[in-house]
Image 1 (tube, rainbow, N blue to C red):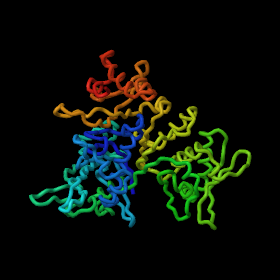
Image 2 (cartoon, rainbow, N blue to C red):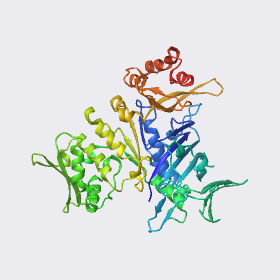
Image 3 (tube, one colour):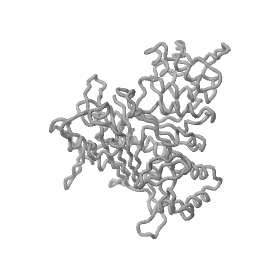
Image 4 (spheres, rainbow, N blue to C red):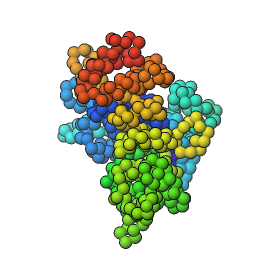
Length: 483
């Protein structure tokens, strides 16, 4: 398995997303009030990751929302009948499958597109099917993300090569009667064709070994995306000895993760304990034990005064900090981590430490120390004005809000759609480089919006700002959308 970084996501027809596109950095913090689509972005990524593993129908029904609620609302009040998702990714150059076979990729930059449609059969039963699927290499001459991050061909992230590839790894081919989804061999003319009308899963989900290395690498990345909404009550529970040593949503399996790390490095728990002490008042030493009679792994803590505590006695803030420092020291942690409200239970005086951990959990492409390490990415969502105001976080912040969805005919007011734009320092602070064609808000404007008791009034104030200050960073169209 290898680890990916998502560099771009596009959504259309998924919940509040229509015509949405967003370029992503290794560390991204999305701020906004409840109900504007922050969590919906995570749901879209979660859906795509599950579709790389399971059948289409099962995946949609396993999501917490009803199937119809995952599709955008139409003008007539019903749900859309199709959704489109696209991601651009950077993967590690080396991949290894479950049978021990490994290979090196020539094209670690890839773009995956998927379009799902709803339909009814002759008996009126609703179904879902894949109408379009593709996986293609991103041409280096047109790779804006690689250029903006100054990644050189022949470096640790982009391999040296002669020639290029224009043919896809997965494609959709249509005839008069049928649509076929095609999985192509990387180095020769071999292929597997699937009748889209009969397929119950994506082609990508069928890539299980290095026979199709690029498709396998992309699928493994999506299957490995993690979504973490830390629940202290889950963290307080022991884990079965047989549970995998991998953190799951809520923080489950943390004792097994620590046990695995300790097995590989007998000193790692001492490092975790020291790190934890840097972020919390009063030092504690973390240990993990096996309760053989109960068949459980249990986290133990020893306070400075010698008291021995179980995980049930630890505070919410201590447990959340323990998750973060564990990930920081876990040599197997890599890939994408979507983290809900990382600042919860963290005192404002400790935000600098939290910020440093989040930065350590992401790949710094400008550092030679990162060469050969796992690719790591963190996307957080938050509604905390204090967290986004921290100077080390501001350059990573996007402001999520709902903008009116204009009817092309100008006759009907459609449901609002999610938009995300950069947050920049106030004018007296050093300016961040924001492309001219990208809309943005200043930190003061976003803080005023988040702290307002009346969001409708706050929207009006944002929209009126352009009239007062024609040189502001919000474009005219954005100001109209804020009303």
